[in-house]
Image (cartoon, rainbow, N blue to C red; front, side, top):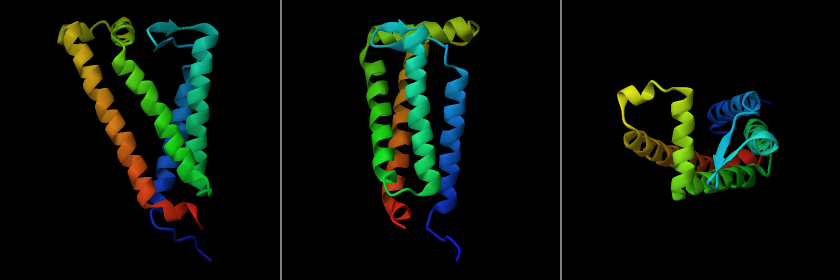
Length: 149
């Protein structure tokens, strides 16, 4: 008997993408993270990245398997991601630390735009990213039958 749940290919592709996201988080375990007006480093940064690794692995797993608790895991992961990004946008200091991190990694970006433009770009991209996550979450809600079979 074949598994012909509607949206299976798209949802499994998204699950695979979350597995890749977990892998990329693992590769950046020691990278500093701007959070709540501070730059997390050392054990705090590793813990932050491991939290995201577990979120991405959990979301990838429920999307791949169609687990019954899939909808709750997707909404939970999206809610945590949203809260973290809103904290970034709400704190001028955190946003400044984030853009400082970008310019330290790639100083040539300041040849293309000034620091204020970069901050505006980061804010815009963060809102687009949030809209995309919630759009995906809405799609998963529409395809919630995938998790009931």
